[in-house]
Every structure is written in C-alpha cells, then in structure tokens.
Length: 218
Image (cartoon, rainbow, N blue to C red; front, side, top):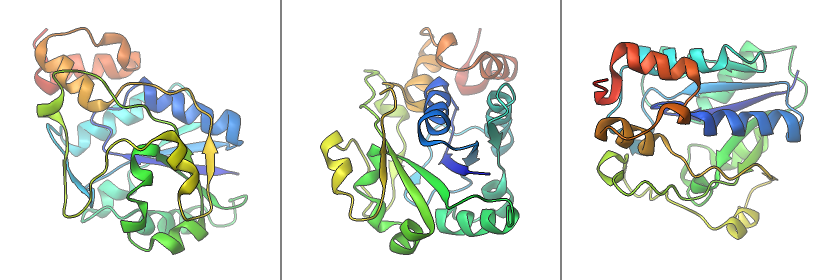
C-alpha cells in the first residue's frame, strides 16, 4: 500500500485539501492519503484555532466520504511540538509490513522555501518521497487579521512555481489544480458573514454550523 501524508492545522479543512489529496492519489499513484492535524506546529502560531477535538472532527467528517482518505490523530495524541520527522517515523512503525515504497510527504509550495529549517530536513527528504504541490496565493482581502503568525526565523509565504524545481532535496512536483483558497480565507468569511458554504465539504459545513465555530451566528 502506498501512503502519503498531508499535514496541517486544518482550521478548517476545506475542498482545496480534498482536491489536492485526490491529485496525490490519481496523479502520483498513492492508495491512501492520511490527513494529519498538527497539535502544535513548530513554525507558526495558529490563529482563531478551534479545539483539537473539533479540528479532528472536521477532518474525520471530510474524509468519511472517500475511502482513499483517512484522518490520523497521531500528532494530537502525542501532544508537544508536531515535528513531521517524528510523525513519519511513527507511521513507518504503524504501517510496518504494509507499506509499498516510501511514505509520500505532501508539501504546498508555500513551504518549499523553508523546508531546510525543518527538523532533520535532509534525512526526512531521504526517508520520504517529497511531493510539492502548486498553491497560488489566497486573495481574501479581509483575511490578514486571521492569518497564522510565524515562529522564529520561519517566514513561510508564497513561493513562485519555478522555485519548486530548486528545492535542494529529491522531490517530485505534482501538477495539481491550483486552488486559490486557504483556511484563513474561510475563517475570515465566516466571521464577517460572507458566503462560504461551498468552500468546505458538506459534512464540514454542517459541523461548523451545528457547533457555531469561527464566530458563525447563522
């Protein structure tokens, strides 16, 4: 079985994440994509974050409709700083004897320029198949106050598509559909009463509405 990991805060998970996961399966040949919500990202402070239980609940709801997708709670269960290196090592043990090849590590192009700052970056790139996905800059004009803050020297941000080919580690570039949407945009739209219903899977929409997350008032 070929497994790929798609990590993030998923605050909330949205249709862009599902479009990307579908491309990983369809174009890169992976059998399953594990959605791994971070407990404490090492390079950013999560803004407007809902509870761990709700973030995982939304991911589980989004994955339920597609057998290729699976919600993985290992970072939430482990607590502490959510280093991808630790997660990959743990998943190798969990799926020992069932893996076909290396675990795929899906990264958005906004992370490509900072990958070398990750824990054990060079070893991580050898242990996994790094899959870089095209991600355009999001454009919600009122989203700035809902953005995640970066930690330390980590800058993040948009990286030109040409720069994907210059990442100094073995990798493949995924020719996914560029989806100009971010969780920050969605949180901003919910909070400000703008349209957002069809930016998330139906199950996630109902989850947010029922629990009145992100300032939803109905």
